[in-house]
Amino acid sequence: MAGSSFFALLDDIAALLDDISLMSKVAAKKSASVLSDDLAVNAEQVTGMKADRELPVVWAVFKGSLRNKAILVPCALILSAVLPAAVKWLLMAGGLYLCYEGFEAIKDKLSRDKPGDEAQASKSVPRSAEALAEYEQRKIKGAIKTDFILSAEIIVITLNVVAEAPLYQQILTLVIIALLMTVGVYGLVAGIVRLDDAGFALAKSKAQGLWGRCVKSVGRGLVAAAPMLMKALSWIGTVAMFLVGGTFIAEGIHPLEQGLESLVAASGAWGPVVKYALFGVVGAVAGFITALIVGGFSKLRQRQAA
Image (cartoon, rainbow, N blue to C red; front, side, top):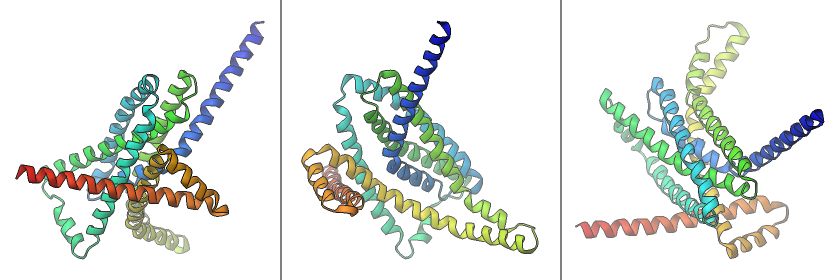
């Protein structure tokens, strides 16, 4: 009898782990586009830092991200229990914010790409030790603030996936996703920001012969690829803002979602591509309208202050 009870307990534990694993996979898949944005934004935050300060900055933001999730997970569980209908509105509000940030990011990128702006940007980086420390702290605070928004999106997405599960499964799944996403994102960020240093080390390798030439070629390739990778990640993150934000907004407005789904269904094999393109358009339009509204309020406040 004791043996059968033990095996029944093991079977229950295995079923529980299987359920949590399945829900975690679904939540991770739904959060993938937010993660690309999170990765790109945080990789860009260390731009302009000294090489020996890049990893300390990433570590500081990593700890801030863990604190963010320690706040967000219990808050999300309480909100789901007290006011579950608010989850959809939070997703839409977060999506609108991401679209606005995406529109502002494109404006910033286009202005920085103008001739002479690169030199001006390099001049804006402080040189003294005190100014550098202050600049670093601003970067860290800005990254943690952005991480809070993106972490909230990930937590709410996960909560939406596990909404019908028992409370203990909700808690375990949320904790697993929070830890995996944080370690995964900041581990990749740390690797990306040190990519050029790895390239320099390989390029200066003392290996001889064909092997040595190959190692040095790989090193030079990494050094050349690092800035291009950072720029590509920055644009990928911006596009992801529109895709993620557009998805949340469209899924929160039922008639709009139905209209988009009918267009996707009529697209045949191109359905998945059309779906993401439409969500991106919704996100871009929402970001443009939000930017106009925010800009209008800003000008109104300036006139009132004058």
